[in-house]
Length: 460
View 1: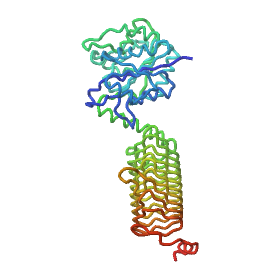
View 2: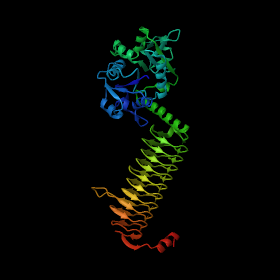
View 3: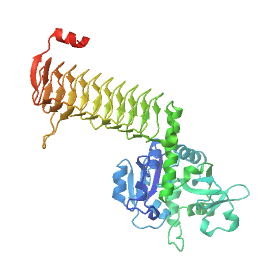
View 4: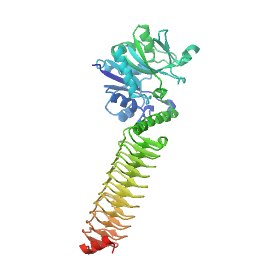
Protein backbone atom coordinates (compact mmCIF):
# COMPACT_ATOMS: atom_id res chain seq x y z
CA UNK A 1 0.00 0.00 0.00
CA UNK A 2 1.42 3.36 -1.04
CA UNK A 3 2.32 5.84 1.65
CA UNK A 4 1.15 9.42 1.01
CA UNK A 5 2.75 12.48 2.63
CA UNK A 6 2.26 16.17 2.00
CA UNK A 7 4.09 19.48 2.15
CA UNK A 8 2.06 22.65 2.73
CA UNK A 9 3.96 25.81 1.77
CA UNK A 10 3.08 28.52 4.30
CA UNK A 11 6.22 30.61 4.69
CA UNK A 12 5.29 33.67 2.64
CA UNK A 13 5.09 37.15 4.10
CA UNK A 14 1.85 38.15 2.40
CA UNK A 15 2.84 41.81 2.06
CA UNK A 16 -0.27 42.62 0.01
CA UNK A 17 -2.46 41.74 3.00
CA UNK A 18 -0.97 44.81 4.72
CA UNK A 19 -1.22 43.14 8.09
CA UNK A 20 0.93 42.24 11.10
CA UNK A 21 -0.78 38.82 11.08
CA UNK A 22 0.90 36.16 8.90
CA UNK A 23 -1.11 35.72 5.70
CA UNK A 24 -1.95 32.06 6.26
CA UNK A 25 -3.47 32.87 9.67
CA UNK A 26 -6.11 35.26 8.41
CA UNK A 27 -9.46 33.67 9.33
CA UNK A 28 -11.79 32.09 6.81
CA UNK A 29 -15.19 30.91 8.12
CA UNK A 30 -13.80 30.78 11.64
CA UNK A 31 -10.57 28.94 10.85
CA UNK A 32 -7.06 30.14 9.91
CA UNK A 33 -6.51 30.07 6.16
CA UNK A 34 -3.86 27.32 6.40
CA UNK A 35 -6.28 25.12 8.38
CA UNK A 36 -8.27 24.39 5.23
CA UNK A 37 -5.58 22.58 3.20
CA UNK A 38 -4.31 20.83 6.33
CA UNK A 39 -7.84 19.71 7.23
CA UNK A 40 -8.46 18.41 3.71
CA UNK A 41 -5.25 16.40 3.77
CA UNK A 42 -6.08 14.95 7.16
CA UNK A 43 -9.58 14.01 5.98
CA UNK A 44 -7.91 11.95 3.23
CA UNK A 45 -5.65 10.17 5.70
CA UNK A 46 -2.48 11.81 4.40
CA UNK A 47 0.31 11.43 6.95
CA UNK A 48 2.75 12.90 7.72
CA UNK A 49 2.01 16.49 6.76
CA UNK A 50 4.86 18.99 6.86
CA UNK A 51 3.97 22.68 7.05
CA UNK A 52 6.83 24.89 5.86
CA UNK A 53 6.80 28.07 7.93
CA UNK A 54 8.72 31.32 7.83
CA UNK A 55 7.21 34.61 8.92
CA UNK A 56 5.28 34.16 12.16
CA UNK A 57 6.40 30.54 12.53
CA UNK A 58 5.41 30.28 16.19
CA UNK A 59 2.02 31.81 15.52
CA UNK A 60 1.37 29.30 12.75
CA UNK A 61 2.47 26.43 14.98
CA UNK A 62 0.20 27.65 17.76
CA UNK A 63 -2.78 27.92 15.40
CA UNK A 64 -2.43 24.48 13.78
CA UNK A 65 -1.09 22.51 16.74
CA UNK A 66 1.07 19.44 16.86
CA UNK A 67 -0.92 17.19 14.53
CA UNK A 68 1.53 18.15 11.76
CA UNK A 69 5.29 18.50 11.42
CA UNK A 70 7.06 21.80 10.79
CA UNK A 71 10.00 22.86 8.68
CA UNK A 72 11.42 26.37 8.64
CA UNK A 73 12.43 28.31 5.54
CA UNK A 74 14.83 30.81 7.05
CA UNK A 75 15.60 32.52 3.72
CA UNK A 76 12.97 33.39 1.13
CA UNK A 77 14.49 31.63 -1.86
CA UNK A 78 11.37 30.53 -3.67
CA UNK A 79 8.88 27.69 -3.67
CA UNK A 80 11.39 25.06 -4.74
CA UNK A 81 13.67 25.98 -1.87
CA UNK A 82 10.69 25.96 0.51
CA UNK A 83 9.67 22.43 -0.48
CA UNK A 84 13.26 21.26 -0.02
CA UNK A 85 13.11 22.21 3.66
CA UNK A 86 10.69 19.31 4.27
CA UNK A 87 13.07 16.66 2.96
CA UNK A 88 14.54 15.62 6.30
CA UNK A 89 11.06 14.88 7.65
CA UNK A 90 9.93 12.80 4.67
CA UNK A 91 12.95 10.81 3.48
CA UNK A 92 12.04 7.15 3.52
CA UNK A 93 8.56 7.63 5.00
CA UNK A 94 6.42 8.10 1.87
CA UNK A 95 6.08 6.92 -1.73
CA UNK A 96 4.15 9.96 -2.95
CA UNK A 97 4.49 13.54 -1.73
CA UNK A 98 1.79 16.12 -2.37
CA UNK A 99 2.95 19.73 -2.48
CA UNK A 100 0.38 22.51 -2.20
CA UNK A 101 -0.05 26.02 -0.85
CA UNK A 102 -1.29 27.24 2.50
CA UNK A 103 -2.96 30.22 0.82
CA UNK A 104 -5.15 28.13 -1.51
CA UNK A 105 -7.98 27.37 0.95
CA UNK A 106 -10.75 26.60 -1.56
CA UNK A 107 -9.04 23.57 -3.11
CA UNK A 108 -11.36 20.61 -2.47
CA UNK A 109 -10.28 17.40 -0.75
CA UNK A 110 -11.99 15.51 -3.60
CA UNK A 111 -9.66 17.15 -6.11
CA UNK A 112 -6.59 16.22 -4.07
CA UNK A 113 -7.90 12.67 -3.89
CA UNK A 114 -8.24 12.57 -7.69
CA UNK A 115 -4.67 13.83 -8.06
CA UNK A 116 -3.40 11.15 -5.68
CA UNK A 117 -5.34 8.46 -7.56
CA UNK A 118 -3.90 9.63 -10.88
CA UNK A 119 -0.38 9.35 -9.50
CA UNK A 120 -0.98 5.93 -7.97
CA UNK A 121 -2.47 4.64 -11.24
CA UNK A 122 0.10 6.04 -13.70
CA UNK A 123 3.14 6.32 -11.40
CA UNK A 124 4.74 9.36 -13.11
CA UNK A 125 7.62 11.42 -11.74
CA UNK A 126 4.99 14.04 -11.05
CA UNK A 127 1.28 14.61 -11.53
CA UNK A 128 0.26 18.25 -11.73
CA UNK A 129 -3.03 20.06 -11.30
CA UNK A 130 -4.12 22.41 -14.08
CA UNK A 131 -7.23 24.50 -14.69
CA UNK A 132 -8.88 25.90 -17.80
CA UNK A 133 -9.65 29.59 -17.34
CA UNK A 134 -10.25 32.73 -19.34
CA UNK A 135 -8.72 34.72 -16.49
CA UNK A 136 -5.02 33.93 -16.23
CA UNK A 137 -4.84 35.01 -12.56
CA UNK A 138 -1.12 35.48 -13.16
CA UNK A 139 -0.57 31.71 -13.37
CA UNK A 140 1.94 30.05 -15.68
CA UNK A 141 0.67 28.61 -18.96
CA UNK A 142 0.78 24.87 -19.64
CA UNK A 143 2.36 24.09 -23.00
CA UNK A 144 1.56 20.73 -24.61
CA UNK A 145 2.86 19.02 -27.74
CA UNK A 146 0.74 17.82 -30.65
CA UNK A 147 0.00 14.58 -28.82
CA UNK A 148 -1.25 16.47 -25.77
CA UNK A 149 1.74 15.74 -23.57
CA UNK A 150 2.82 18.49 -21.18
CA UNK A 151 6.10 20.00 -22.34
CA UNK A 152 6.58 23.04 -20.15
CA UNK A 153 5.11 25.60 -17.80
CA UNK A 154 5.84 29.14 -18.95
CA UNK A 155 5.45 31.96 -16.44
CA UNK A 156 3.25 34.84 -17.55
CA UNK A 157 6.01 37.42 -17.22
CA UNK A 158 8.17 35.75 -19.86
CA UNK A 159 5.48 34.23 -22.11
CA UNK A 160 5.20 35.06 -25.80
CA UNK A 161 1.83 36.22 -27.20
CA UNK A 162 1.14 32.70 -28.52
CA UNK A 163 1.75 31.19 -25.08
CA UNK A 164 -0.27 33.93 -23.37
CA UNK A 165 -3.23 32.91 -25.52
CA UNK A 166 -3.27 29.44 -23.94
CA UNK A 167 -6.13 28.86 -21.46
CA UNK A 168 -4.69 25.94 -19.48
CA UNK A 169 -2.98 27.19 -16.33
CA UNK A 170 -0.61 25.55 -13.88
CA UNK A 171 -2.07 25.62 -10.34
CA UNK A 172 1.18 24.85 -8.53
CA UNK A 173 -0.23 21.71 -6.89
CA UNK A 174 1.72 18.49 -7.46
CA UNK A 175 1.94 14.83 -6.53
CA UNK A 176 5.59 13.74 -6.76
CA UNK A 177 7.31 10.42 -6.80
CA UNK A 178 9.28 10.75 -3.57
CA UNK A 179 12.62 9.41 -4.78
CA UNK A 180 12.60 11.60 -7.88
CA UNK A 181 11.48 14.67 -5.91
CA UNK A 182 14.30 14.65 -3.37
CA UNK A 183 16.88 13.76 -6.00
CA UNK A 184 15.76 16.48 -8.40
CA UNK A 185 14.87 19.44 -6.17
CA UNK A 186 18.54 20.31 -5.51
CA UNK A 187 19.11 20.39 -9.27
CA UNK A 188 16.82 23.37 -9.83
CA UNK A 189 18.53 26.44 -11.25
CA UNK A 190 18.08 29.84 -9.72
CA UNK A 191 15.72 32.11 -11.66
CA UNK A 192 16.90 35.64 -12.31
CA UNK A 193 16.38 38.43 -11.44
CA UNK A 194 14.41 37.15 -8.48
CA UNK A 195 17.25 34.89 -7.34
CA UNK A 196 14.77 32.15 -6.36
CA UNK A 197 14.21 28.47 -7.06
CA UNK A 198 10.75 27.83 -8.49
CA UNK A 199 8.87 24.58 -7.99
CA UNK A 200 7.25 25.06 -11.41
CA UNK A 201 10.65 24.36 -12.98
CA UNK A 202 10.28 20.73 -11.86
CA UNK A 203 7.96 20.25 -14.85
CA UNK A 204 10.64 21.30 -17.32
CA UNK A 205 13.21 19.22 -15.46
CA UNK A 206 11.05 16.10 -15.77
CA UNK A 207 10.56 16.71 -19.51
CA UNK A 208 14.29 17.24 -20.02
CA UNK A 209 15.05 13.96 -18.25
CA UNK A 210 12.41 12.09 -20.24
CA UNK A 211 10.47 11.35 -17.08
CA UNK A 212 6.75 10.60 -17.38
CA UNK A 213 4.37 13.25 -16.05
CA UNK A 214 0.61 13.56 -15.88
CA UNK A 215 -1.84 16.44 -15.58
CA UNK A 216 -5.25 16.51 -13.94
CA UNK A 217 -7.29 19.33 -15.47
CA UNK A 218 -10.22 20.83 -13.58
CA UNK A 219 -12.74 23.43 -14.71
CA UNK A 220 -13.72 25.05 -11.41
CA UNK A 221 -11.44 28.07 -11.18
CA UNK A 222 -12.78 28.83 -7.69
CA UNK A 223 -10.84 25.85 -6.33
CA UNK A 224 -7.43 27.28 -7.15
CA UNK A 225 -7.81 30.97 -6.49
CA UNK A 226 -5.10 31.90 -4.05
CA UNK A 227 -5.38 34.59 -1.41
CA UNK A 228 -2.96 37.49 -1.64
CA UNK A 229 -5.03 40.44 -0.45
CA UNK A 230 -8.21 41.22 1.50
CA UNK A 231 -10.37 41.24 -1.62
CA UNK A 232 -9.36 37.67 -2.44
CA UNK A 233 -9.79 36.76 1.23
CA UNK A 234 -13.43 37.88 1.11
CA UNK A 235 -13.95 35.99 -2.15
CA UNK A 236 -12.62 32.76 -0.63
CA UNK A 237 -14.75 33.28 2.48
CA UNK A 238 -17.86 33.45 0.32
CA UNK A 239 -16.92 30.31 -1.62
CA UNK A 240 -16.25 28.26 1.50
CA UNK A 241 -19.38 29.50 3.24
CA UNK A 242 -21.55 28.66 0.24
CA UNK A 243 -20.18 25.11 0.20
CA UNK A 244 -21.01 24.60 3.87
CA UNK A 245 -24.55 25.93 3.44
CA UNK A 246 -25.10 23.84 0.33
CA UNK A 247 -24.12 20.69 2.25
CA UNK A 248 -26.55 21.57 5.04
CA UNK A 249 -29.41 22.26 2.64
CA UNK A 250 -28.84 18.98 0.83
CA UNK A 251 -28.95 17.27 4.23
CA UNK A 252 -32.42 18.66 4.96
CA UNK A 253 -31.80 22.05 6.61
CA UNK A 254 -33.80 25.08 5.46
CA UNK A 255 -31.70 28.21 5.06
CA UNK A 256 -33.94 31.16 4.30
CA UNK A 257 -31.22 33.44 2.92
CA UNK A 258 -27.81 31.76 2.30
CA UNK A 259 -26.23 35.13 1.51
CA UNK A 260 -26.91 36.27 5.08
CA UNK A 261 -26.23 33.04 7.00
CA UNK A 262 -22.88 32.15 8.54
CA UNK A 263 -22.04 28.57 9.55
CA UNK A 264 -18.56 27.35 10.43
CA UNK A 265 -17.28 23.97 9.17
CA UNK A 266 -17.37 22.16 12.51
CA UNK A 267 -21.08 22.90 13.11
CA UNK A 268 -23.69 20.13 12.85
CA UNK A 269 -27.39 20.84 12.21
CA UNK A 270 -30.26 18.35 12.22
CA UNK A 271 -32.82 17.98 9.46
CA UNK A 272 -35.93 20.14 9.25
CA UNK A 273 -34.24 22.90 11.23
CA UNK A 274 -34.79 26.38 9.79
CA UNK A 275 -32.06 29.03 9.92
CA UNK A 276 -33.20 32.62 9.42
CA UNK A 277 -30.99 35.47 8.14
CA UNK A 278 -28.10 36.97 10.05
CA UNK A 279 -27.62 33.86 12.15
CA UNK A 280 -24.07 32.78 13.04
CA UNK A 281 -23.35 29.18 14.06
CA UNK A 282 -19.78 28.92 15.29
CA UNK A 283 -17.25 26.51 16.74
CA UNK A 284 -18.39 23.05 17.82
CA UNK A 285 -22.08 23.86 17.87
CA UNK A 286 -24.54 20.99 17.47
CA UNK A 287 -28.19 21.75 16.68
CA UNK A 288 -30.96 19.15 16.74
CA UNK A 289 -33.93 18.61 14.45
CA UNK A 290 -36.93 20.87 13.81
CA UNK A 291 -35.39 23.92 15.45
CA UNK A 292 -35.92 27.53 14.43
CA UNK A 293 -32.81 29.69 14.72
CA UNK A 294 -32.76 33.43 14.27
CA UNK A 295 -33.05 35.83 12.75
CA UNK A 296 -30.14 37.67 14.34
CA UNK A 297 -28.78 34.91 16.58
CA UNK A 298 -25.22 33.91 17.46
CA UNK A 299 -24.66 30.36 18.72
CA UNK A 300 -21.11 29.38 19.64
CA UNK A 301 -19.81 26.05 20.99
CA UNK A 302 -23.32 25.16 22.15
CA UNK A 303 -25.47 22.04 22.04
CA UNK A 304 -29.11 22.68 21.15
CA UNK A 305 -31.69 19.90 21.36
CA UNK A 306 -34.69 19.15 19.14
CA UNK A 307 -37.68 21.46 18.60
CA UNK A 308 -36.03 24.57 20.05
CA UNK A 309 -36.54 28.23 19.12
CA UNK A 310 -33.70 30.74 19.43
CA UNK A 311 -34.83 34.22 18.41
CA UNK A 312 -32.39 37.14 18.24
CA UNK A 313 -30.24 35.72 21.03
CA UNK A 314 -26.63 34.89 21.89
CA UNK A 315 -25.68 31.43 23.14
CA UNK A 316 -22.09 30.59 24.05
CA UNK A 317 -20.73 27.36 25.53
CA UNK A 318 -24.18 26.33 26.71
CA UNK A 319 -26.36 23.22 26.76
CA UNK A 320 -30.00 23.50 25.69
CA UNK A 321 -32.28 20.49 25.93
CA UNK A 322 -35.39 19.76 23.82
CA UNK A 323 -38.42 22.06 23.41
CA UNK A 324 -36.70 25.18 24.78
CA UNK A 325 -37.69 28.70 23.71
CA UNK A 326 -35.16 31.53 24.01
CA UNK A 327 -35.52 35.20 23.17
CA UNK A 328 -35.79 37.63 21.76
CA UNK A 329 -32.58 39.12 23.15
CA UNK A 330 -31.66 36.27 25.48
CA UNK A 331 -28.08 35.53 26.46
CA UNK A 332 -26.72 32.17 27.55
CA UNK A 333 -23.18 32.55 28.86
CA UNK A 334 -20.69 29.73 29.44
CA UNK A 335 -21.97 26.98 31.71
CA UNK A 336 -25.67 27.68 31.15
CA UNK A 337 -27.81 24.53 31.00
CA UNK A 338 -31.50 24.80 30.17
CA UNK A 339 -33.60 21.71 30.82
CA UNK A 340 -36.41 20.42 28.65
CA UNK A 341 -39.24 22.84 27.98
CA UNK A 342 -37.64 25.91 29.57
CA UNK A 343 -39.04 29.25 28.42
CA UNK A 344 -36.56 32.12 28.60
CA UNK A 345 -38.04 35.35 27.32
CA UNK A 346 -36.67 38.69 26.22
CA UNK A 347 -33.63 40.24 27.88
CA UNK A 348 -32.90 37.25 30.11
CA UNK A 349 -29.37 36.14 30.92
CA UNK A 350 -28.14 32.84 32.38
CA UNK A 351 -24.55 32.08 33.37
CA UNK A 352 -23.06 28.91 34.88
CA UNK A 353 -26.50 27.77 36.01
CA UNK A 354 -28.96 24.94 35.55
CA UNK A 355 -32.63 25.68 34.89
CA UNK A 356 -34.69 22.55 35.38
CA UNK A 357 -37.47 21.27 33.08
CA UNK A 358 -40.38 23.62 32.61
CA UNK A 359 -38.79 26.68 34.24
CA UNK A 360 -40.41 29.94 33.13
CA UNK A 361 -38.14 32.96 33.03
CA UNK A 362 -40.18 35.56 31.22
CA UNK A 363 -38.05 38.65 30.88
CA UNK A 364 -35.46 41.04 32.30
CA UNK A 365 -33.81 38.54 34.65
CA UNK A 366 -30.28 37.42 35.47
CA UNK A 367 -29.57 33.95 36.84
CA UNK A 368 -25.90 33.34 37.60
CA UNK A 369 -24.21 30.51 39.51
CA UNK A 370 -27.54 28.94 40.38
CA UNK A 371 -29.39 25.63 40.51
CA UNK A 372 -33.08 26.03 39.66
CA UNK A 373 -35.47 23.10 40.06
CA UNK A 374 -38.24 22.03 37.73
CA UNK A 375 -41.33 24.17 37.09
CA UNK A 376 -40.03 27.27 38.87
CA UNK A 377 -41.51 30.64 37.89
CA UNK A 378 -38.88 33.40 37.78
CA UNK A 379 -40.60 36.78 37.74
CA UNK A 380 -39.52 39.74 35.67
CA UNK A 381 -36.47 41.54 36.97
CA UNK A 382 -35.27 38.70 39.23
CA UNK A 383 -31.54 38.78 39.88
CA UNK A 384 -29.20 36.38 41.64
CA UNK A 385 -26.67 38.60 43.38
CA UNK A 386 -23.85 36.11 43.02
CA UNK A 387 -20.74 38.28 43.44
CA UNK A 388 -19.66 39.90 46.71
CA UNK A 389 -16.72 41.74 45.19
CA UNK A 390 -14.27 38.93 45.92
CA UNK A 391 -15.94 35.57 45.27
CA UNK A 392 -18.89 34.10 43.36
CA UNK A 393 -21.59 32.36 45.42
CA UNK A 394 -24.33 29.87 44.54
CA UNK A 395 -28.11 30.22 44.66
CA UNK A 396 -30.42 27.21 44.94
CA UNK A 397 -34.14 27.32 44.11
CA UNK A 398 -36.25 24.23 44.73
CA UNK A 399 -38.79 22.81 42.30
CA UNK A 400 -42.13 24.52 41.94
CA UNK A 401 -41.02 27.71 43.69
CA UNK A 402 -42.53 31.06 42.70
CA UNK A 403 -40.11 34.01 42.56
CA UNK A 404 -41.96 37.33 42.36
CA UNK A 405 -40.96 40.14 40.05
CA UNK A 406 -38.05 42.34 41.05
CA UNK A 407 -36.65 39.84 43.57
CA UNK A 408 -32.99 40.05 44.62
CA UNK A 409 -31.54 36.70 45.72
CA UNK A 410 -28.34 37.54 47.64
CA UNK A 411 -26.08 34.49 47.39
CA UNK A 412 -25.23 32.23 49.02
CA UNK A 413 -28.90 31.55 49.56
CA UNK A 414 -31.42 28.74 49.15
CA UNK A 415 -35.13 28.88 48.38
CA UNK A 416 -36.96 25.65 49.17
CA UNK A 417 -39.34 23.69 46.96
CA UNK A 418 -42.75 25.32 46.38
CA UNK A 419 -41.77 28.43 48.36
CA UNK A 420 -43.29 31.77 47.33
CA UNK A 421 -41.22 34.98 47.26
CA UNK A 422 -43.18 38.22 47.07
CA UNK A 423 -42.46 40.85 44.45
CA UNK A 424 -39.67 43.31 45.25
CA UNK A 425 -38.13 41.15 47.96
CA UNK A 426 -34.45 41.06 48.90
CA UNK A 427 -33.74 37.50 50.04
CA UNK A 428 -30.65 37.42 52.28
CA UNK A 429 -31.28 34.17 54.17
CA UNK A 430 -32.59 30.75 53.26
CA UNK A 431 -36.32 30.30 52.73
CA UNK A 432 -37.63 26.88 53.74
CA UNK A 433 -39.82 24.78 51.49
CA UNK A 434 -43.51 25.76 51.23
CA UNK A 435 -42.90 29.12 52.89
CA UNK A 436 -44.14 32.56 51.88
CA UNK A 437 -41.52 35.30 52.24
CA UNK A 438 -41.41 38.93 51.22
CA UNK A 439 -39.98 42.28 52.21
CA UNK A 440 -36.61 44.04 52.41
CA UNK A 441 -34.98 42.04 53.76
CA UNK A 442 -37.40 39.18 53.11
CA UNK A 443 -39.14 37.72 56.16
CA UNK A 444 -40.78 34.34 56.47
CA UNK A 445 -44.48 35.15 56.76
CA UNK A 446 -46.18 31.80 56.90
CA UNK A 447 -46.06 28.21 55.77
CA UNK A 448 -48.17 27.05 52.86
CA UNK A 449 -50.55 24.23 53.76
CA UNK A 450 -52.27 21.99 51.23
CA UNK A 451 -55.52 23.99 51.39
CA UNK A 452 -53.72 27.24 50.60
CA UNK A 453 -51.94 25.64 47.69
CA UNK A 454 -55.22 24.29 46.36
CA UNK A 455 -56.76 27.78 46.58
CA UNK A 456 -53.77 29.31 44.80
CA UNK A 457 -53.98 26.79 42.01
CA UNK A 458 -57.69 27.72 41.58
CA UNK A 459 -56.79 31.41 41.63
CA UNK A 460 -58.85 32.09 44.80
